[in-house]
Length: 367
Image (cartoon, rainbow, N blue to C red):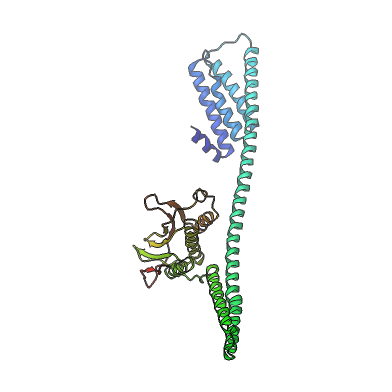
């Protein structure tokens, strides 16, 4: 019944008025058949309600007047005898006043309902705009963070790295001069050069971590191989990468999607080492005809309770990165094996296949 009434909102006002007149006629005919002894004037209110709610208060008053006249005429036609014309007029006036009160209440209720719907619509629009703006700002912040990391990485590599390289060369020249004069400070100069070379290697490592690779479409396997090797060298742990596609591995042609997948794996490895104290980490890339599944498993003590509850910044960033590319994200503690499992599933519908299919099981050396 409610569904049928809701459909009346799509009707034109003349159509609703025609329906109200038809309802009055049907109720009037029923009133005639039941006789004047049975009082069914209450059923006329249904037509009045429809007229007020879907057309307006004025038309509700017209339907009320029509209902009163139908009620009086059907009673007379059914054999009701009045001792005076004043009696049906008086009864009709009382009935009409009652209907007008109902019309006024329904009209006020309808007005309040429209105001409430308008407020809900405005509030919904405001919330939608706020969510869209927040999403846009979060995306811009993430993109800005990527740009800043790339710039800092390039500055470290091309600026500080080159400067330290020049310093090391100057130190070597100085050491050779001191050695040529058989001075004891030559050994100290050589030690200084070694320290500078260590600083150069540290600078390169920092640069790779900030801006590890230039993402290329269809090179996820190579990217994760480099990530596993780099993590092993940096954290001195055993980090392995495996690729087990059931279907031909699709190429992620969206560089942003590839970047987000890479960063999720990178963040998961960092959390596993720093928070989980893991010594062995496995990065696995699986694919089917419909999806790409990235899984990072470690043998650590698991994430802190606040991180598992979604309070950790790194966890929120990983989940947000997954949402940015339409992927599902899940993190859970492995009850039987210990450690943590991070899973990111990305739909690969419409992604073209790589021409050269590669299956890899790349294992980095233990640190």
